[in-house]
Length: 148
Image (cartoon, rainbow, N blue to C red; front, side, top):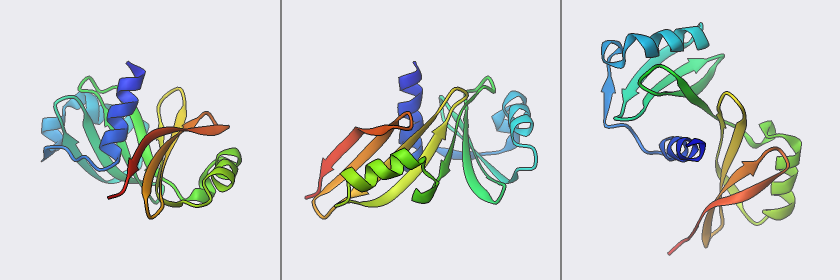
């Protein structure tokens, strides 16, 4: 189940958009109440609703963030984009040593209640590679694609 949630959240964070924007009333009191409790002081909140997930896009501590909820108001996870210098040192060093021929095109953290997982998309002229962190010690290949 956890793997399904991570995969779905990753897909959503990598660019899939929900079918339509929603008003606060369409989202439901449980979700908005949970959001207000978790992110007191959030600004510019925009809601989007899918069949299985509700997404809040908002500004929190001067950073754009994305919170994913199930319809019952339970927080699934929070996504935020990162600069490479914000990665844990071991992960950054691993990228530098093992993927020096690639450049970073996307980097974000998916934080659930129990852990944070980092995803980085790397490219060369011939290949696009998405890596998923394994704790803070290394990376595993999440997706690989050759360019045409």
